[in-house]
Length: 417
Ligand SMILES: Cc1cc2nc3c(=O)[nH]c(=O)nc-3n(C[C@H](O)[C@H](O)[C@H](O)COP(=O)(O)OP(=O)(O)OC[C@H]3O[C@@H](n4cnc5c(N)ncnc54)[C@H](O)[C@@H]3O)c2cc1C
Image 1 (cartoon, rainbow, N blue to C red):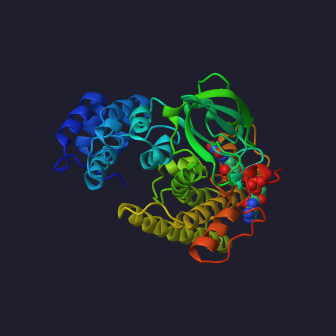
Image 2: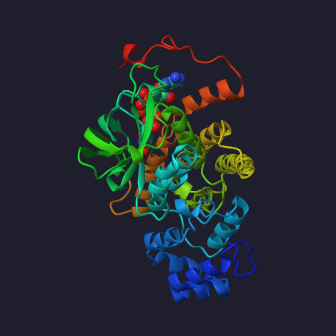
Image 3: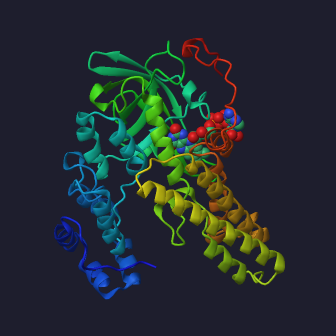
């Protein structure tokens, strides 16, 4: 249920924001807000240019209003900024730029970068002018990301990058990338890594498509050959890239935990899968909703969804109190992956034969199966469920750390796959 709000907003610049919305949105959208007509708002949204709206809001500082004006925000306090975003939500206005820039790169840049780099990288990120992707995983460094072999060598005011990355979601549609590379191979593997904001259009960046099992082009492999990166694009201090990457991964675990909302948000869309309500409705249309075994599985899924929602609210409360994302994100990430996968398995079971041999042109059945296949990735992407369990074991339960035979050895001397 969208909560419609038109007045009485106490944050600096609220009149300016309302004027901008009147100027930017089609007239039908504004009158739909005034009437409180959610369906008309959705219709206006569907026929509008989302990227253009985000650009206008980002240019005016409303995408992340708590950032300083020089970094593309409006310098509001977190509370004031939250009220501004609540107003945008209540109008149904999209303000999140596409890609992983806002949820993952922006908090990392904010925490780790120099003033000059923030001024350079944040404004085009916030206005959606530069869409971001993530260049972390390599063919020989997935779960053990600190083993990465892509190198960055200093050459005056530039860095020269060589190596290969893989599984880069939307790498073919991005203008910038969060890149971690090895700047000092004589240091142990977690040290000697540095974090950059790579220009994906630079000479030497080659993007090759990977097709997933649903036949879609979602991710890519990226080959980097003598790519020159200005030092201004360095996000972390030299050698602190691992710690900066932990800021990104903490934020990613939260993003991949879903919104916890019954009404789906962008974070749920990334994960794929149909929401609970659609599966319950499908059980009814397939005339199996009365069967005890089906009701039992539906109730279990409903309860799992509610428990997850409460855990996400708890994590949100921590974030609102100013605590950086911690290991609790591993709990919600595992729970979301499991509940989303179980939900889609139930959908496929209810579909029966249609899920393995549907009639040609039956777009509905194809969509159920595509969504089921997409969610298989939920327990892998952003760090596997096994790795999240290791994090919980070590950082929450205080169990002994995984043994590391080469702890403290220079990266160059550690054998790799
Ligand atoms: C849909 C999707 C999108 C992705 N998008 C991106 C992206 O945009 N950018 C990016 O950089 N990466 C991306 N990834 C990559 C993802 O982060 C890695 O796939 C993931 O971290 C696992 O690494 P791996 O595939 O190399 O598997 P491996 O690390 O080789 O793991 C293989 C198996 O061994 C298990 N395992 C490994 N080590 C341990 C251990 N220490 N303890 C217990 N079990 C262990 C794992 O859980 C897994 O089951 C994406 C992946 C997917 C599926």
